[in-house]
Length: 137
Image 1 (cartoon, rainbow, N blue to C red):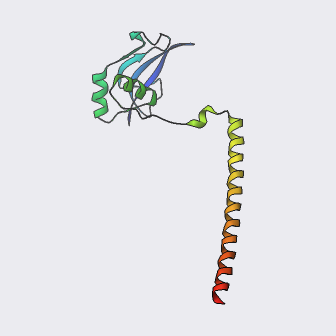
Image 2: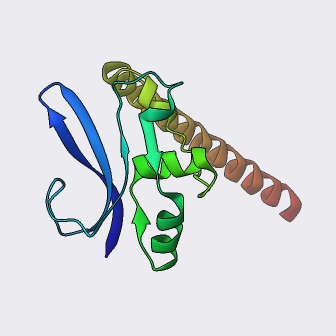
Image 3: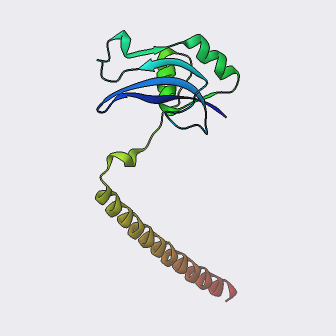
């Protein structure tokens, strides 16, 4: 399977990424088929030199079945080539301890509602029996 992904280059603490077309089994920084562009995260977001993509080659390879990685999909979405679906993970913003407490509270609330539903069902059954007994008289 072909993937369009980033391969890290640059020195320690100075990242620079090549956007490449590679076989999915190849190592991240290893063998690739074609270089499609580059990304320099150290430059400010308003600079044009931060990201360069050969969109014609990208479109051509995607027609042949190449799948972009998540990060490359973001770049392509910004360029208007691919539509990226929005993700929603509201739990991500909640700290882990608070998430645990919320789950425990939700479980307790569910148990309480289940118990209330059983009690209500029992009351209804008793009322039905009483009504049936009165109707039989």
